[in-house]
Structures are given as C-alpha cells and as structure tokens.
Image (cartoon, rainbow, N blue to C red; front, side, top):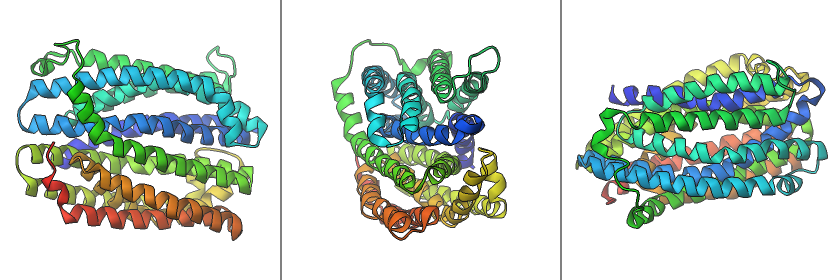
Length: 439
C-alpha cells in the first residue's frame, strides 16, 4: 500500500513530464512534407539532450539517497541543508552547461548527422532546449527532496501545470496557431523551455509552505563543501552511466539513420513511446528508492528488501498489460504520433518486437532504482554501461545494418539488452551487499 501511494503521483508526474516530448513529436509529425525531417531532427536532438541532462540529473540520486537517510533518522534540518546544497549546484551547473550547449549546437549537429536539413532543424531545436537545462535541474533537485520525504505528489502537480503551458505553446508555435508564427521544430524547443521555467518557479514557491519550516531549507546562504562532496560521491557513477548509456541510445538513433530516414523517424517515435513505458516503472522505482533509503536510515534492512521486491512485482505486472495492448494494436499506437504511412508501418513492426521485452524491463528498472535509493550506484553503472557498449550498440549495427534486418534487427538488439540488464540488476538486488552501505 505504501509503495502504491508513493508510486502513483510519481507515475502521473513522470507521465506529464514525458508528455512534453511526446506532444512535440505528435505536433512535428503533422508538419506535412517537413514531418520526416522534423522527426529525425527531434529524435537526434532529444537523445543529445539526454546525454547532458542525464549527466546533470544524476545529482538527484545523491540528494534522494542522503535525504532519505536523514529523514529516516528524523534529522529534518540536515535534510533541508542537502536540498539547499543541491539548489546551488543546480544553478551553477545548469547555467554553465546551458550556455555551452547553446554555443555548440550547430557544429554538434553537423557531427551527428550527414543530412543537412536534419542538422539545421535539429540545431535550432536543441539550442533552445539547452537554455532550459537550468530550470530543469532546479525542478529535479526539488523533486528528489520531496520524493525522499514521501511527498511525491508535489512533482505531479508541478508537471501538470507545465504541461498545460506546453500544450498551448507547442500547438501554437510548432504549427502556427493562436497568433504565433509557424516555427516548426524550433517551436518545440521554445515551448518546452518556457514551460520548464514555469515549473521551476512553481517548485520554488511551494517550498516556502509552512509545513516544510522544520527543514529550515533557506536558513544559511553558505555552501556546505562536505555535502557537495558527498552528493558527488554518490551521484558520479549514476552520472557516468547516464552519459554513456544515453550516448549508446544516440548511437542507436544514428545507426537507424544509416538505414534510411524513414527508419530513423520511426525509431524516434518508438524511442519516445518507450520512454512512456518507463513511467510506471520509475514510479514504483522511486517509491522503492524512497522506502529503501528511509528503511536503511531507520536501521531496518529487511523492510528495505521487502519494499524493493514488492515494487518489482508491481512493475512487472503493469508491463504485461502494456505489452498485450501494444501487440494488439501497434499501428494505432504509432499512428497517435504521426500520420506518415511509411513511418507507421516501420514503427508498428518495431513495437511488436519491443513489447516482448517489457516484462524484463519492469524488473530491471525497478531493481536499479532500488539500488540507487540505497546509494549502491557503482554496481548499476558498471552493469548498464558494459551492456550498452559491449552488447546493445554493436549488436544494433550488426543486426540492423550488416545483416540487413533494418528496424527489426535494431529492436531485437534492444530486447537482448533489456533481458541481460534485468537479470543482472535482479541478481545485484538479491545479493544484498547494498544493505551494508553507510551514508
């Protein structure tokens, strides 16, 4: 019951967060003759953002792990100090990386694709999304804090507000409605970044509510160097894993482009759809991470194991239902994101193959999030990075390009990767070494 209560708001919040990208994909997919180029540009651009955003987002792992321990120990002021330290880190890193990304957007896209039209559209999109890294990081830091103390619904409400803003701006700026000029792919970057700033302001405003006074979040305007070191120590394996695994997914998109632009466009749609399937898993994973950390902080490792096991069962069960839906109506699912016949046909084939791995995905993601909650991040990093670059990427190229299986070969390699990942994460969780980790 506790896991479900914590997980449902996270799932809804993550659903609304992912909906920003999904809605942008759906709008760009309706640009007519520009749709194929736009979808390809969006696919490469979003994955590239995941590289930078994922590296920075990893600080939330350290913040959540430490705050859950301090909260479990009933040390509210120390938990508030962790949040303040995370805010300072978010402002510095978000500003620096955002400006850097804006500057390198054009040359970066020329390296990522040989298609000039895709490179031009993608650069316009990504430079604006880079400017949104600052509010994105602020949101992520507050989310980690509120999730860690069991207030998972805060992020849900903020994301709903963001999506209302994004739907209005995205529909207007991409397609040229509500008095806006038709910006196409560039409009997707504008709308997403503006909605992120709205979300960040909402998070900050809510943190001043009286119920959080005991955390004394803003009591000191100094930076705790020891806490920064502790956050980095826990977070850096997750950061390395995020960068290298996201680069693996980017290589996956690039390999799809070597087959043809239709395959790349379909892979873009399916990648965004796959991110949607992560949401219930991230919900149960976050709930498990919260209860694992709090249980370890309270000196109850057996409770931590129980919460992790129950979360995995719930995650796997939901994935079975999703897999059946995807297999029954693949064309209708892909058709929600684009009306281009070739993209729908290729995407439908890939969706059926991907569905075969969903139950394993359920186990793997929840188990890895549980290990993150315990601060056992090095194991997760080693397993995920190794599988990405020793199995997933090379196998994608061999099956998709060399063997000539096209999009079928690409997504078969994804299935194999997911199966191996889930197996090793399950083993790591059952071995129990994470229960002995001190934070």
